[in-house]
Amino acid sequence: MSTETIGERRLREAREAVAALDTSTPTTPSAASSAPLRLPRAGEQVHALVTGTTLATGGPYGGTVLTRGQTFTITDAMLELSKNRFGQYSGVALVHDPEAQIEKYGEVRFAPGPAPADLDPWTYGSAEWRVAREQARREAWALPTEDARRAALAEVQRRFGAAPDTATTLNKATDPSVRAAEEQQGRIRAAGVRQASTYAPQERGGYSEGRE
Image (cartoon, rainbow, N blue to C red; front, top):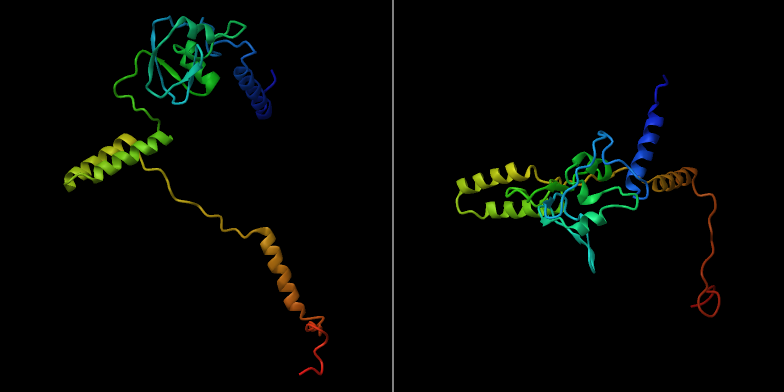
């Protein structure tokens, strides 16, 4: 039995990833299971977990861009639009199969049922998270007493986690072209002046010798 090398494994995984993203190539709902896909039904509620996910709805606009925590009701049109020409499903049709969502998108985009009341509308590290954290921090500092501020700032830390790293790492390495130019100038200075020019610019109207 041959052992798969690291290069062969990476090539195989890359091909599988491309095949999963290509809607023209039929793929199974989940590579980890041969069980049939459990499709949602029209009238079932679903909520989005990733802001920016596009939901195919048909109609004049074709789709809707969702925000995290947005709840919507599945329609027959949504299910039909989530199926490709090979009869394979994607998008919201995978709501009951998070593994299939991860396999296809690298993340879970849909979850069944209405969004929980405590579901934050942001994910850690996102632009929405930064805005919400900064707003909460400002509100905490605006409280009238030190005890209240301390408690509110602790809650900001608990809910949002550590502040984003704003430190900037500067590259102090000398540019190779600059270094080469400096070295060349050093060699010229070390060799001394090899040629001097006695040329003097002419004045308007002729040479300057003998003119007062």
